[in-house]
Image 1 (cartoon, rainbow, N blue to C red):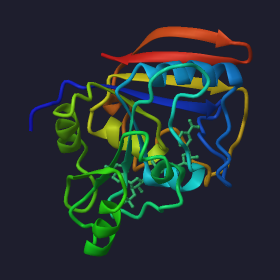
Image 2 (spheres, rainbow, N blue to C red):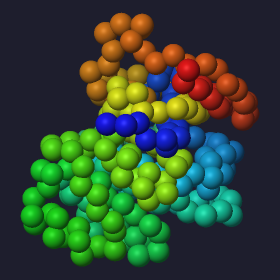
Image 3 (cartoon, rainbow, N blue to C red):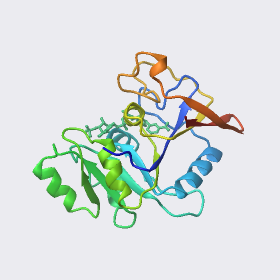
Image 4 (cartoon, helix red, strand yellow):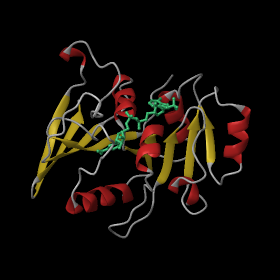
Amino acid sequence: MEKSNMHVILSAAISIDGKISTRSNDSKLSSTKDSIRLHKLRSNVDAILIGKNTLLRDDPLLTVRHIKGKNPTRIILDSKGTISKNSKIIKTSDKIPTIIAVSKKISKTNLLKLKKFPVEIIISGETSINLKSLMKKLSTKKIETLLVEGGGTVNWEFIKNNVFDELIITLSPYLIGGKNATSLVEGIGFARIVNSPNLKLKSVKRLKNHLVINYIKV
Ligand SMILES: NC(=O)c1ccc[n+]([C@@H]2O[C@H](COP(=O)([O-])OP(=O)(O)OC[C@H]3O[C@@H](n4cnc5c(N)ncnc54)[C@H](OP(=O)(O)O)[C@@H]3O)[C@@H](O)[C@H]2O)c1
């Protein structure tokens, strides 16, 4: 399959030890200044994407709030179409464009339920969502810049499939630890460092006690 021309940015706030949430799913690692930066970035992309666990645990809105700007399309990876009508995403989907990406494994019941929400449904992949084919479909909808806001499992899939261009990490002054706390990149991981994508440091910006680090894939 051809590579889409989409520009993909992986974005997260991490602790010094590389965690994006604690073992009890506290993920408030950002600062107010950093949230303003993130919301500016959101207003400059066509779409934001998250995985199902982030939706379940954080119940985010994924809108632009700290500044004035347009809301990007929200994309949720939810293979089996289990998203709840009580989630903030569904509750606001009549106002903000929302795409639920599902796989062919979705049950008829869940598909019918999803069809009642004011969302667009994209089916791609057999059991899990095939990112490359999803991205091709998104490209046809004029989505040219995509901000991936996690979590760790989703980040791994973008890295493993080599379908990202940039990484913007906020290094937050916390040490979390715990093998059950989610890391920036989950999944099985690479066996050798040589398998890691090559990243070039583009910029480092200090926001008081936080560092915003921008790497570009080379
Ligand atoms: N600090 C931060 O910046 C930040 C940002 C985001 C999230 N988080 C934290 O990260 C944690 C969640 O991370 P997580 O790793 O558990 O889950 P996740 O990456 O949010 O979601 C993973 C789930 O997405 C679904 N999915 C469907 N297709 C997929 C595909 N092609 N690739 C990857 N996932 C796909 C899968 O569920 P199905 O098979 O059921 O579809 C999968 O289990 C939460 O605690 C959240 O608070 C922190």
